[in-house]
Length: 438
Ligand code: FES
Ligand SMILES: [Fe+2]
Image (cartoon, protein in one colour):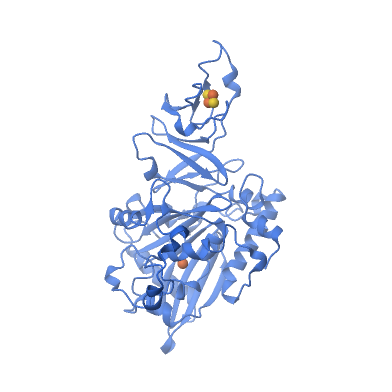
């Protein structure tokens, strides 16, 4: 339980807010590259409570500038994409991709007023299917050498989905290893051969046991959390019969991402990006250590569950997430179908726009959530005191030396859990067609 004041501090994201100021020191996913693959590459972006417009100019360069025209506020999403920039259709003011006003065709000839006019703009870069924005002060930081950024484009597939809730509760489901045994429980096991592109449907580690069965049979994980250069490493241990232990290593990447195993072949690195205080997007990068990702299949699977252009899930609170009590009795724990994303979405949206943390009761299995909130509080204090050099990944550790992170399922007799997880992870890294050494 925390105070309302603390809950506001940890959750609100607009300019000048506590958590919002921390988030602004990190690259934020702003759009999928897919969204700009149109005849007129201009899309609205709402990020950290700010309304922006993202566009690609005739030179193929990206610009991200404020959505409302600095003249009298018309919507630049309807702008004319011309002359290497965006021209407001109201009075023709023209902005280049840095947001600088370069022409005001209706003002008196020779007017220099445009030199004083600049639309708010943020640096953007494109990496493996996602366009990233840096909305913080000063120079943007380097990208860490995570697998999802290091792998070639062929081995990464990116997608996103809209959740109608605050970013922090969306993130917190990802650092809660206990829920998988309940929320994602399947009462029957699917053939692991049909598992491509789905989470928890593969075989567990080096066994023939379906992950679904393992999670169902061993619902009381022992969870260990360690600090790392990038955030937290969570090791969930499920002690099985016969002296074996299932070791699941997942990660929190500060401030808002997770990196988790999806299957032997792929990991998922997922950001929970605030649109505003009560809406967020998950942006996932599915990274393959084996064959190139079958992007057509992955996209098809996910487009069946989402509506464009806003990537809103078809199952949502307005249709009770497809809840079927009969299915809940016989097939799934939730009665909301086989897509585990829908389960997570229900869990976090059903808390309300911003979870009321003045009335919660955290248990032992919530240790990852507790540790992450502590980290976020420390970061908020550092930003307030101007001690940016204390923030994770700003603290002198070279981002180019932050690799991995190890995200893996394994089964071992060994008591050195992380060593055995690492050894099992190394097997696939050694066989990986791109350089995945850590
Ligand atoms: S409002 Fe945009 S040019 Fe006038
Ligand atoms: Fe989940």
